[in-house]
Image 1 (spheres, rainbow, N blue to C red):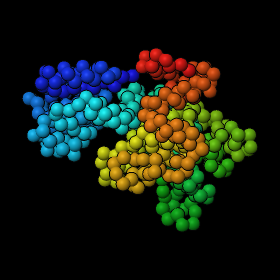
Image 2: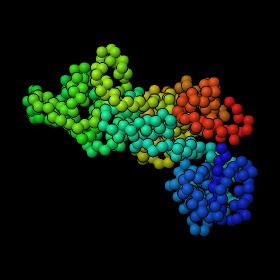
Image 3: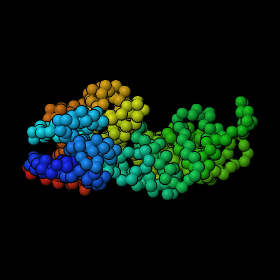
Length: 456
């Protein structure tokens, strides 16, 4: 797909000349007669703008004001400034404020093309992330993803939130099971608290008391009565994380709570009704645990009324750029750093890695990279050695570095390789890529349009 340049220039002759030169060199252009007109284009978020080429001195809205608004509206869009010789100082200040580079009038077309090519190449990851973000359907708070598996998960979360049935969330460690549980609670009509419980972290002899509470004479050291976590979650949701670690002796007691809606404090004679929605999670295969006698079958079926499975990160590589952006902004804010970016080479490295620790491992890698980065751009050298040296990454990275591929070129290479792997089966390729067939067909049409010689 051709890059689209927005030209903001109040001098008609120069504006026409720039438009002719850029279109003759393969760019699509949109022209604005002044800063106010350019801003109107930028505010139409559905309009594709890959780069802003703007004069400094214009009537109405000046170049620096336009730059500031561009950074707010479209931070992924690079800005190249054109300035007369007498305004170089002003242009330098704009570069300090976030412009990519400035050109002093008059300049040669070759010089302009070199600057535009460099700006577009270096901003490719950010622009791709913004494109994915615009395509992402409404997602639950704090959950990041645009791939087909995540879109299906979002739909299931919304459906689960409308009911009061028990939910079992499965997925590998680090996939974000608690985020999904919180989203179900927050999207529901429940007014009570969300109470998370890590079943693996509570000693066996204390877990009944922690969950259901105890009376003042229940055991030695119990000086006063204490409510349990189920009572704390009354009217809300209790999240039983690592439910597969629940001791066998506790499992029939949890089953009774699910069946009867009542709890009994340790040492008490009377039961107490509670209105609690139970969401459980595990990274174990509970069916296997049932077969091996480590988990009750009746409890498994009582928990598994609504089942949500979170796909591992390696099965949805399309989500990695969005997650990188999310974790990068989060880590930069915590570290007190601004305007952190990831280079195409670093993003290629991150996208190719298998991520056995899933999103949690990715967040840790980004936090480390932000802490160690010397400038505003994260490079492969800022990433952990295990990621840089991954056998899965090396061949893809070698090609990306040798050819200085942009993110779009890397994406194209990955799609083509996946189609070849599946023997041209587009349904299977779309499944492996984590996108739907429509997205895959759109990508292939874009490649054929931009390259008449394109073939698989």
